[in-house]
Image (cartoon, rainbow over all chains, first blue to last red; front, side, top):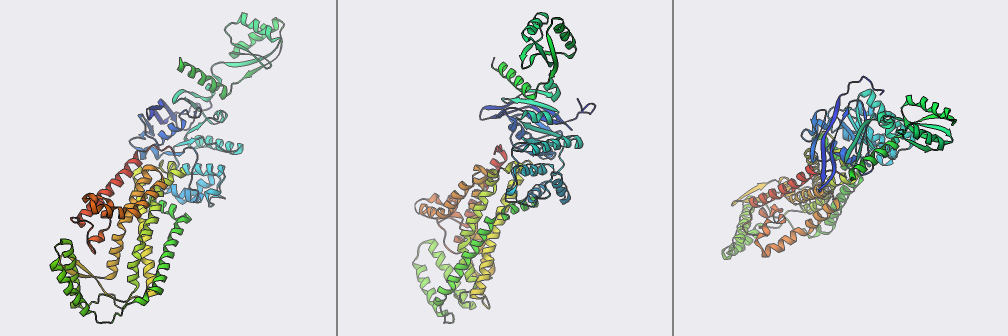
Amino acid sequence: MGRGGRFLESIVVLKEVTKVIKGRTIIDNISFEVNKGEVFGFLGPNGAGKTTTIRMIVGLMDITSGDITIGGNSIKTKFEEAVKHVGAIVENPEMYKFLSGYQNLVHYARMIKGISKEKIDETVKLVGLSDRIHDKVKTYSLGMRQRLGLAQCLLHDPKVLILDEPTNGLDPAGIREIRDYIRRLARERNMAVIVSSHILSEMEMMCDRIGIIQNGRLIDVQLIQEFVHGTSASYEFEVIPSEKAITLLKTNFPKIPVTHSRNGITMELAKDEVPAMVKMFVEDDIQLFGIREVSKTLEDRFLEVTADKGASDHD
Amino acid sequence: MINLIRNELMKIFRRPGTYVMIAILVVIVSVTGIFMKYNLVEDEPNVTEEWKPVLQQENEALKKQLESSSIKLEQDYYKKQIAINEYRIENDIPFREKYNAWSFVKDSSELILLAGLFTIVVSAGIVASEFNWGTIKLLLIRPINRSKILLSKYLTVLLFALLMVGILFGFSALLGALLFGLPEQSLPYLNYFNGRVTEQHIVVYLINYYGLGSIEMIMLSTMAFMISSVFRNSSLAIGLSLFLMFTGGQFTALLSMKFDWAKYILFANTNLMQYIEGTPLLEGMTMTFSVIMLIIYFVIFQFLAFYVFKKRDVAA
């Protein structure tokens, strides 16, 4: 799927991670792996447990049971070794507002060995903040703070980048910039990027794989294309009269799901079944004006998946 | 660790509030100095007067009181006074001298309370503010364990305390020298310990005096630090610590009149000067006892601060 042939090497591994806070299970037995060079989307409605999971990955929260390793080091027992390879923004990139952007970066650079002044300058340039870096952070716009946040997590060339809602509060140009940027980091620096969001269209454009989390459970992990398209595609046939077409279809192919849609009827079928349909409609004097493949959006799929699992949970 | 402390210092000294604190300290010392200069200098005794007979008379009176006294604490006090007076007569060291820079430095030590207040404000905010600002998240995801980060913050508080007391000392000495002048030959301070009198240079004595005077503020700053780390609330830390700073001493003094266990209260032990220059609050209290009590309190405060900070789930 566009990434063919690259050897997949996992760098972040979650093993049966559970988090219980005051007797309530917030995260329930989550396991997944993130590979080098991929953008992994962490998708779920608000309150599903995205941020809690991210907090556990970076060691801000204790893990009740299970383990998380980064580059083979457990965040529980070898925190420093593990977190050394991680750059992260957890929720909003809160900075010291009374310091300049540059001083903020110096502050974080001092906390890791071997970050030179040149490296700081290079990072500032990379995120495009050179003009304003010596201004106080309180004068920054949200977009600029977001970039400073990004600079802060790139200072030490991490192998894993974790971004919690990175496009929150950005304008469309900013969103696009961040998105391109994330894709580039993954591709050029072979970084593993974990992005959380509840904005589906964003994820669709940014991620290679997504994991869907709902009520603290990971309900699905899939490649984004497979996830969106599923196994069969949908085709919309512009037909008149549509009632007759549906009746015809139901008698001849009772197994194919069909629905009314705006311009005619929509059915789910494999591509090689399309000619047979056309032949059937033409032979029965149904007027056929066009055929269009309907790709589902991530949103459709997401709602489908969460509804399914949600329903089965309650059974 | 040095880098972490540099970070903390940067966060303190890049905020204007810090300079306001220093300015207030300097202004109050100046006002006190000027006030002293124009109001008290007239009361200056004639230092050239014959002082030896005065001390001799005093000693005779003290000896009589010593004989009639039956309380150990009182007896010790009289013995000390007599020994010091005799030493003065023998070695020709007058008991009073013209009010000079060093006298002013000693009087300024009252303002350690103010330096303490500012240190408490800084100490109370140093952990809690990171939570308020939300910056704690970015701070704790560095490859440095939490204990080190907290330790660097505590050491920074100590440095800040040292700086405030240093400014107080240095500025009073400077202002004292300008207003009252340095004595041509400063008289030594006389120490009395185990029946023997020894001389101590006045500056050494004053540094010790400031050091001992800072113990209470260090203990309270440590307490504020603990509250800041445990409750993540700087207002609570400031409020409680200042309240205790201003009332703790009195409460303890009141309690000590009725109850013997008052000697275990922190404030009964913070004033180590009581063993050097005065008399202890309660009988049976010694320097060693107080130092041990202070260490116990210190360890409890630090244990709580570190334990909670290390365990905490950061969800700010």
